[in-house]
Length: 367
Image 1 (tube, helix red, strand yellow):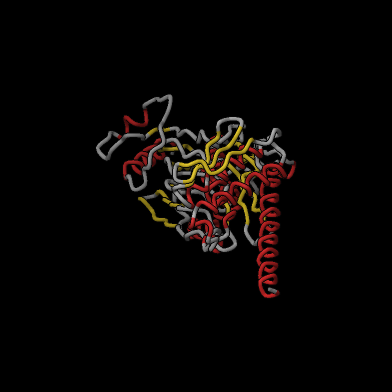
Image 2: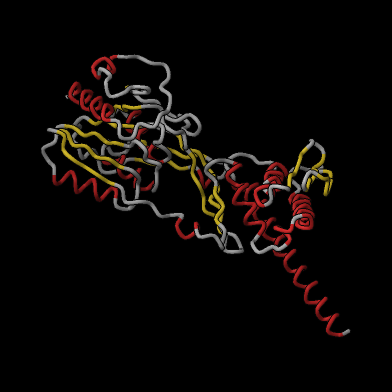
């Protein structure tokens, strides 16, 4: 009898501690999203996103929202119904509701009942990117956490006659050093083509530094704005134009994103470069890495990027000066340079040689 009672107490205490840990983690996540996210967030809306992510753990589980209440379905049968908290930002109430639905789902699903994983972590990995495409949840147990800051060292350069061609596939800690080396080794160039096609971004500090290499000291490169004061910043060029005003053309496409868009927009709007290619991706957000108590972390969007002319990059992207959308290798480059357009749809142009030819033609026209 004593052994049975001891076993019960151990199991009960374990469940209670697990529930308390879950409460603390969910409270921390919901509070952080409400306080730090770039736009005002109704906690209830994010909690519903979280609960709907139960379906990613077991396809038999569904959560439906009819406006005033939530319903949990397991294999098509109603497993739980509960009214929503009246206050959409009552964090404690939404935490309790989230936990109650998780517990009910676990009773109805053998896969969830085993709990051989951290269920809140798994839900957040799916739910946070649904808040916006740039926010990410890194579980303390997930292998991607170790690799999240890793970027490939992608840099190439070559001379095309008297024009220096530099391709940046990402911004990392070597990018600025590589550009300076290339400029030292090739001093007799007459112009530069900077290829940012397919560049997803990377280190903002490097993108800002490299932008400043081609601009007058003190020129505005970009600004960021968010809900909190520490999200509002201006980024300025330092040091002056290392090209001594030689012509510069930047290649962009639909996969040019984030800090690569920041750089392209700054060079274009400050009159330092012409852009050739297509509309860019439109990822103009800044993420703040926020550690959580269970060794997990959130990369939560807390600000938007703005160009020197106060154009918001996110969801809109940057338009080029010369549009190559839909152009194949047989297109007449000289005619392309003369065409006007209202909109240049984003398109993946990596490897298209006509883009380089168009950049060369534009450079020579401006020499």
